Length: 364
Image 1: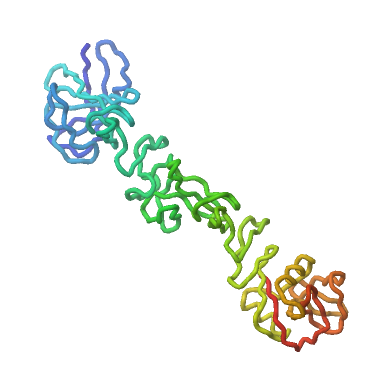
Image 2 (image 1 turned 180 degrees about the vertical axis):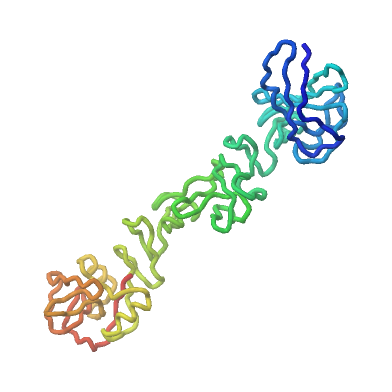
């Protein structure tokens, strides 16, 4: 049965630079619908004959010679691509298959047997992605994999591996140091991932107290954690804020307790200077308003040593300076003899003159 090919776009010269010429075909005699031949691509060929394989110069955007008596079209069937040609000088063009082109993992003996973007692995003799590329099921083609090649946008990267094209606003160095224009894992507040070399894809980072082997595996941005002693934890000095679900970092001379960073001074001041001294540290005078806080302060101070803290007396009532809340006199007994509070021996007290020079405690 003869197949008559009707060309709607003709090749007018002996060289071509585009592969987008469309060929439409149909059976004239039996009017059989052959839909898999309705869309095809012209590619550049050289030195073709019916008896030998054609030598492909390039599939896309390449200037090359086109043998004047041969035009080809492609038929896709499942995982194969069949490449045909015909001699157009005949009244009824003769159709002949040149060779088959395979998709990923299809058998091959040379690169010519593989679909565009694939190469023939000489060892396994199957079609594979070229170096630096992996197969993307989402994009149905080989795409750049992690930290390989140069990308201009995320569509250049393998989206099946959850990769993006790194820019100055997004990079993770997880584990390889990130470079702008390389395919990388996303690393933004609330959406942090890292490259898992075992799974060959980007995966979500680990939460607080999860087992880890490297810092990049933890929620560095969202929880401020790092991999410490094999678990995602907070840097010291510092600790975990359970309500905010993230770490709080204290200064190197601070101590973390119950969500706050405390500083126990090494210098002495008068009570009137404590507010300014604490402000320098972006802190406030310590408010020791619970038994747990009193016990904590007591465990970090020596016996019979006084520390200025928050607190003032107004109308025979003691209040915490920064919150104006009433001081709980049932925790520690007060004499109401002075107008400022200090801490010593596990309790706050008010029988020392505000003009004394004591150490002080700040909190943040």
